[in-house]
Length: 319
Length: 122
Ligand SMILES: [Cu+2]
Image (cartoon, rainbow over all chains, first blue to last red; front, side):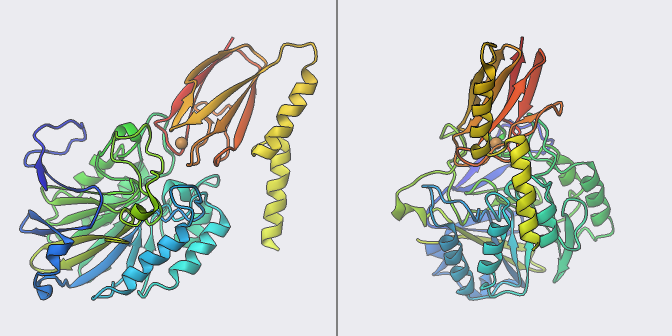
């Protein structure tokens, strides 16, 4: 499962010595458990036989992503139905999530009716609160005005913010605005300055969770799967012992651990996208109907304080 | 009430700028009837698999370029020097722009900025 990458192909300023990559392209779900900086991954079928009490965290939350409400093409003509199935999975968890993170592309075309449908559907999640960051599909035509009005209350700039939960510092970033020709995702100067200031007073022992739509690590720049100024953002987080970066956008699970930082991307609840470079474009991937639900899903994150243990479990809608 | 006024504004904008496929059909039709003996013409650029096809085009001044989105994902057509800018084009939506002045017009998709191309007007 683990794969050692010895070359640094991406000039993003991140040290790639000891680069460990844990990938689960598709299928039955993988659990990645980080203990003392060592990543262990298990198939979900193995997890069923493990001691459940050791798996429980001090803080448990769920990430969903890329619901693309409004999309109705062949890759999935009913994205609201699959979102509902993801919600049923959340509501069936042993430990109910303290909150849910939606990492963007709530809608397909930023339409009022799409956001309405999303809000109606998400009402049935059994959780205290849902936190959002926008995807590029949520800020079409109006520079994200409607998004901020609906989901960005109390946020700064284009919709970034931070909050604390049980000693963990959460940071929601926006990297889908003001994109430059030829470039990738972008955080921008103003947001980077805010981030530097936001973490300044935190103890280095505070666990940090960063979430944003487009991956904050270079996955496949040819398809725009990366963020131009992510290295700058990560440089402000170097002194922290545990940093977890949660992204969406690529509609598949990818994970890597680099020093103190764990990067993870979630599945979509709407449609899968191809593995990097395996198709002419990153557009929606049409799979046989009986395979679709094995490629859609959600991410459950358990954090155990003191042990610096973060367990990330990806589960598909259908095994 | 708020919804209605928004719709009316949207409808008015479509009439003026020709942003959707319906209004583009009108735009194209009027261009065709107006051209008469002049040599104004239309060139189509397809948006396929996250790229503009053909990638770079060379046209005579007065040409109207029509972009058509064939992808299942929305794209935009945005000039890097603010000369033209489409709304998000859903599947099969069109955007057109008439190039009167010679020059090189670089453009990109503001949603997927890796998508870049140009129109060279002679
Ligand atoms: Cu695009």
